[in-house]
Length: 195
Image: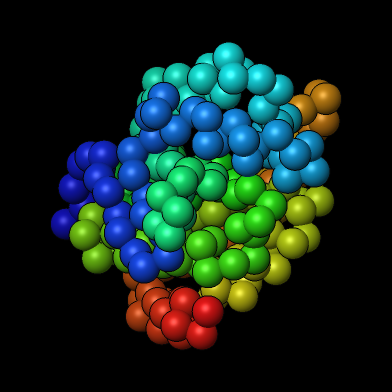
């Protein structure tokens, strides 16, 4: 059944997800300074190295979260980040979120394989019965991407969060449940193998 989530390295072909640390700060800063990439995130892009280090510290100190650096294996460099969050062992569920990638890695195998690794671990190692995602209602690209991998759109939480510039955002929730995982996994593996 569902076990405690400990930091772990998840290895694929194009990407490796490893526990986020201050060792990733320079790489994340180099790739996380584009405002447009953070337009639908709770906060804006990195402004300098101290800001990046503070963001990493906040991620590491957040409760019920396991943050990862997304590392491109070909050049062994951090290109983004993602997390397990809202971990609820008593319900066998968690959320995958806070996912961002530098511009050169968006819409590439890096993102697809990162999702495959996170979902495989959640369903096959942790015994999750549900994995959820949420996105800003304005972020149509993210919503299309979640639907492409086979996640089900569940609904909208209105006025759910106050994000950057004090914007009151609606959040769209998606999920994948245990009975759907086999088909979703096939779809993700096929996409990774095509790349």
